Image 1 (tube, one colour):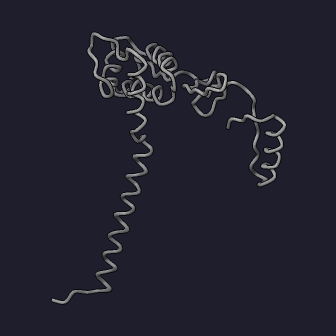
Image 2 (cartoon, one colour):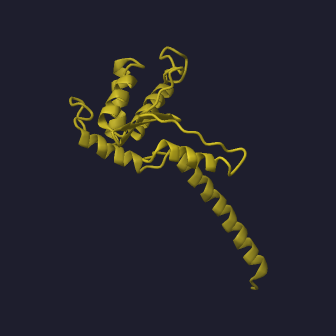
Image 3 (cartoon, helix red, strand yellow):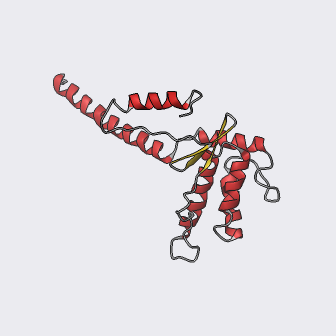
Amino acid sequence: MTWNRSEGELKELLDQANTWHPNIKLDYKISQTLAFLDVLLTNNNGVLSTSVYHKPTAEPYVVPFISDHPRHVFGNIIQTTLTRAVRYSSTFEAFNKERRNIKLIYPSGYIENQFQSFFSEYIDSSPFLPYIQHETQFFLMRQKLLSQPTTRQSQIVKHLASVNIGNDQTDETSVKKENPTCY
């Protein structure tokens, strides 16, 4: 959370909250940046921005290109990291930084093909022009991507639909038993 009051008031609030349940303890950190899961939240003079967080001790996303993995695995890695970059980067600069990092992981020709495939879903581009020329294109692409459900959200909806279908069939069966039709 962000806090605009004094540190003392924050400590007092957290001390009180920490008495609510013995197994839940809240702590605080005062900083301009905060890593949470794989998002880096930055406060620049009251303006919050987000970018992809890379743990210093973790390896980058790379599965070596010469490994025996099926080729689609490498494409999926690039597509996923680009999606993550768009979702987590609140600024065009943060996105471009992440895009430059992604370009370092596999051979340039392969990367260019994957980038073209990814960007063609969201913006009209020519193979001769850069994929995103200005900030407006980035924000339009980001808006389109953020309005799409994540893989997990799609899985949950699919599961709920199958549960509802199962319940609907049970309801119909019980109705037929209660009200048998005579011919």
